[in-house]
Length: 359
Image (cartoon, rainbow, N blue to C red):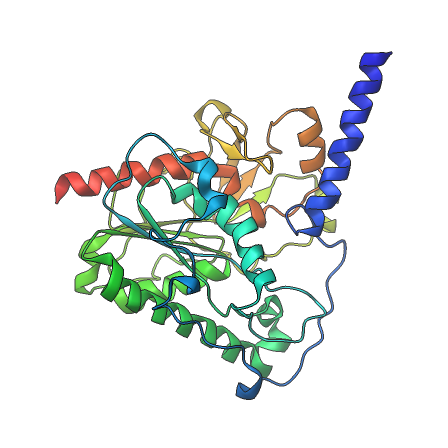
């Protein structure tokens, strides 16, 4: 009886934790489409521009101690490579009328650190020198057609201009000719594509590109003129990309609300982030590790059922109670990196070592 009571208490504790995490947006997903309010886009209402000459405008920088990454330190020395990571859309409050986030707001900074830095950019942290700039990212509503032409495009352009300036300063002041990994998720991956086109594609800097991880966005086969889709684990100079979806029954599928529409990514390129080759599925034994919300890594937890222009994934195997929490989630977009966290960490090092051996 006592054992049964302990199990029940553990279950309700996990449920309670899930509600706390939901409030941070980590497990939360809406049950119906969100209706956003808006206002006219005006340059007079824009938040202050970040100063990338200052260390304070970087969420992560090799010369800045970031306590939240302490758990991801490894004994193996970092390689002499740089990683430039761009975080996804976190500016999403439906009651917030602003078009772009305020990088000087402490709540904004904390959200970046406690979500994307902790659970996403950390996958590249042990590989080399990690750089994550704060930027005035566009509000989530800009991706709705009704908002794009009424200020959304301008807000998105402003976000890219911040990142472009951050990247220029990164190259001029910090990079010192080291090879580079470009990585981003969702809105961040969209901006990363533009950086690749403007600075790397068919240009001298392409010779310094180890790899681009363009995760949670649409990348077409002809997206770049000379940056190719990589199809083996040690290949360098190209990109990998994917969008994750849960394998569900047709009944559940009809009720699902997706951050990234399956129609929008139709025909796009999709990598296998477990085997890193042309295989259209994977086995549990191939999977290196899912980073869960408790910061523990669960190997052999994820199985890719099929790949076309997207990944179809079975509900991860992470123990009964955690699996029950995950089973309430239909949209896997937020977990595009978490699901394959250890796979990415290992792969980024493999590609970096492969690049360094040839130069």
